[in-house]
Length: 116
Image (cartoon, rainbow, N blue to C red; front, top):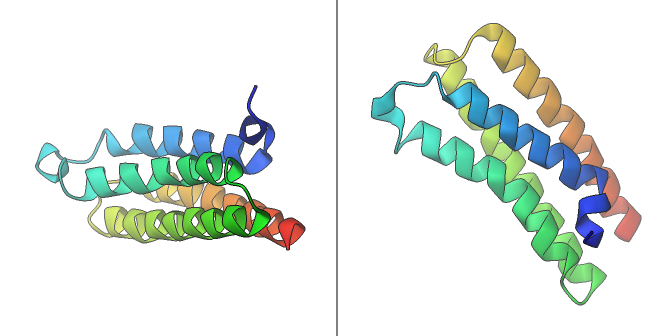
């Protein structure tokens, strides 16, 4: 097992991305290369940046990758707001994803603070 796989933040990020994938199935196919793609890539980027950052040589580098992961998380929050506005996801799905994003954001912030 790699060290990043032990991180709560990474585990939550993988679950969040999986939920995003499930939620985006309902988005119309004409958005496949638009909103769906952007949302999925941003969601996957969160765990990927945690993994990559954990393999860097310094804590400063890892912190920077955590910041990038947090930025990707914020990107997903924006995208799910648009998906909700366009009625691509239900209010219930939006609420669930938003709640998961809040939790993940807190965990990422805590991880960053622990390294400073």
